[in-house]
Image (cartoon, rainbow, N blue to C red):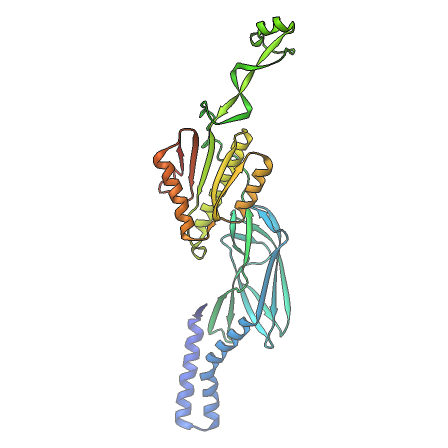
Length: 356
């Protein structure tokens, strides 16, 4: 709750209060003390009236879809219901304007409600960042009849949006591990070695003459060609080093960083899956979770999961992830490629660490 005063109106009120005190001290009687009592009780009664009004006010918010994608426009609805017997006059609506655009509900929209009245506001909404965060109506501001003081409250029923990141190719160049090939790991379903291997099949029109196995062909009396082996690749594991910051401290800069973080990791997952390289992604979803992505379905499952929010259920889970990063940073890996993507790196130009 935040209380503020309009300086000009407050000075007028104090001047009227002083005049009432002076008048009552000189003349006395009901005619003098009645206005003085009204002046003395005005602000306390106004504060009580506002507190009761807010306590009996109900605010509901919703979007037409459960999850939306960053940049998409959807329909938003806010419902304000006065459950009390006293009317609410000229209430101002404050919105989360740093993270979403409400096209038909501008900041400071005024609403008045009679006893037991309900009003609805509709608007198109566009969420600016990927992640899970509060949007829509943020605060409600009440004032007394003479606008001497204003009391601002956070809404009791905040609405959390689940915003999916866009699927882009921003991780392609940064994570081009095509040349990290050795004799161990997963075989690619798409890429093949340059030289023929041991697998054979019947010669087909267009096959290179150099791929013909003449000895086998002579024995079988049919041209047989050697097929190239599937290219062997390292297995890839990505650790999402999400920062552990309480939600009450999330500001615009944090949401921008989280947006880029999610978009980059989703792009990395898509990058490897498109190459036929299975990838394991370790990330915090309350507990530390491992997701193996080796198909379009598994990619979609991961994509939906990270859109629901990255968070640690306890400090122990955060330490667990940091210990895992430290182990692979210090020991390296002989058969696998481990990649750590840092949400808030010390050096913004080096937010990716690769351990081989």
